[in-house]
Length: 219
Image 1 (cartoon, rainbow, N blue to C red):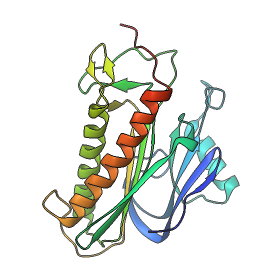
Image 2: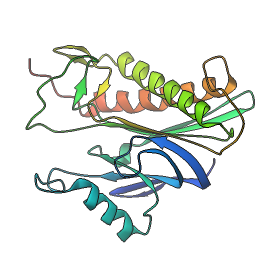
Image 3: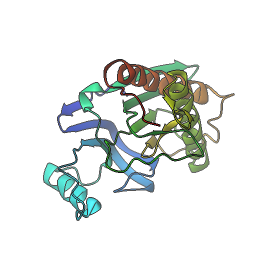
Image 4: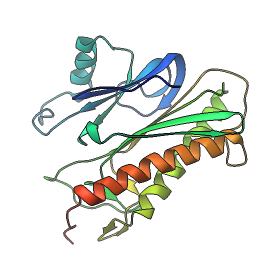
C-alpha cells in the first residue's frame, strides 16, 4: 500500500500492487470486478460533447493508455488537487485517495438545477490490506460513504436547499484482496482505519476547494 500515485495530467492512477476485488459504481467497470489499479481521467466540457457516447470514449482512452482494465473515475476537478491519507488502526491499514470538487453539490433528498453550469465531483478510492469477503467489502463501502458525507458537511458549503452533503456525480471505489474477514464496521480496526482515512482525505480536499474555488450559489 506504499506504491506512489502516478500523476500524468489528465490522468491520475493508484496502483493497487496486484489484482484486488474492487467494488464501485464507476462508469466503465461497475459492481464487483477484479482490477490492479484505479484511475482518474480529468475532463472538460469540450471533451464531453452532447452527442458523445461517454462510455465508448472512456474505454477507448483507457485502451490508448494501455490500462483497459483499470476502474476509472471521471472528474472535472484539477487532479493536481488530489489528497490522500493512510491510517493504521490495530492490525488494519487503509489508504484513501480523493479528488474533491463541490461545484455541483447537493443536499441529500433535494436537487438544484445544474443545467448549463460547471460540474464537479468527489471521487474516492480506498484500499486496505485486510483480505475481505464480498459482504465485508460492501460494509467497507458504507463506512467510506459515511466518512465522505461527514467530511463534506463539516466544511459547511451552504446551498439554497441546505448544507452540502455530496455532489450529484460522486463515485467511490473500495479495494481489498479476497479473503475471510467478515466485517468492516465501525467497531472493527478496519472500519476505524477506513473511516479516518476517507474522512481526512475528503475533508482536506473539500477545505482546499472552499478556499480556492467556491463561488456563491444562486438561489
